[in-house]
View 1 (cartoon, rainbow, N blue to C red):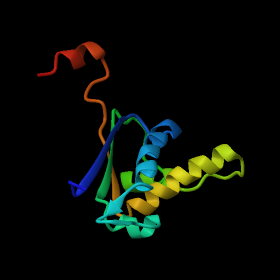
View 2 (view 1 turned 135 degrees about the vertical axis):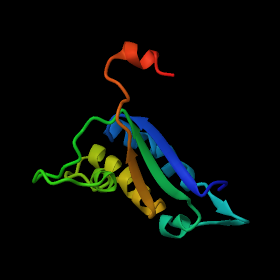
View 3 (view 1 turned 60 degrees about the vertical axis):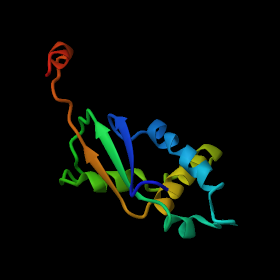
View 4 (view 1 turned 90 degrees about the vertical axis):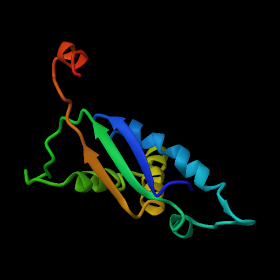
Length: 127
């Protein structure tokens, strides 16, 4: 790859829809070759992948766990990447995307950026 950092820039929170955007990376990883050899398995392939940074613009949630304790944005990302409970085909597909992200990007982080202003008219006048 040509970069030491893969940045995914999305708006709002980490949702199923935003995780599905990463499905393309999962599909591409199946086709990656180094030299003449096809790399088998994502753990081996991960050594060729850059670090991953997920930037969440206009983030409005409080970063807290179930007990109301503060968590980091990285903790928020890790929680979003945990497997979901269930055995349906839909859940299996969602969990596969999460697994590929975890496997391909062992070095990952998340940055949250709040919306600079709430009033859309003020946002248009920023210089």
